[in-house]
Image (cartoon, rainbow, N blue to C red; front, side, top):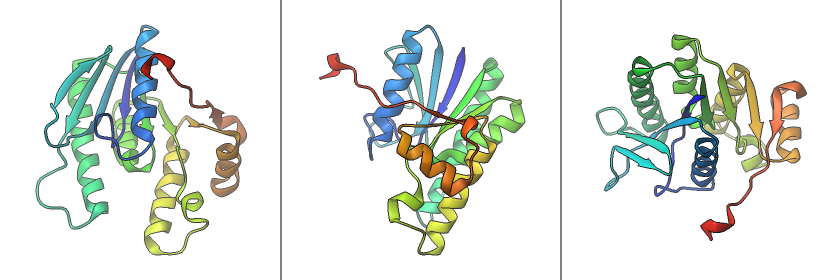
Length: 190
């Protein structure tokens, strides 16, 4: 398969656990003979294009201008990811787009509809769970984007039975749409 991964973070740019999850999953899929390309945010000092352990990583700069806040930065990043994804799709058809969390939902959905590709989403955590409920407009917005991503996705992956139950409860996702794939480790990395 030719798989396009979308993630706002990827090593060595690590904000949380999502970066390592995407990197390890991408390496494992590549090791099984799949062609994996990742689009992620460009960070200072990192190359725009890198091939590591069989995974091609494309780093994009969010669109021009100084963002007003984190949300406008995220929107600018999604536009840049869609542009890069479109360029990659013109080079050859992907079999699947895999979006990791709400921060790349717009790019994932856009590429799904433009190129008629199946969209898979991994939800690593929910805004509701991170905050023990939704308490302000920003949290409601993030939760709505999370729901929208799960709605648009053909399949939703989460990393635990606890998260599965949270997704079923909070987003009313049907159980047959969710797959639990627990995080693993690669001992040789340590």
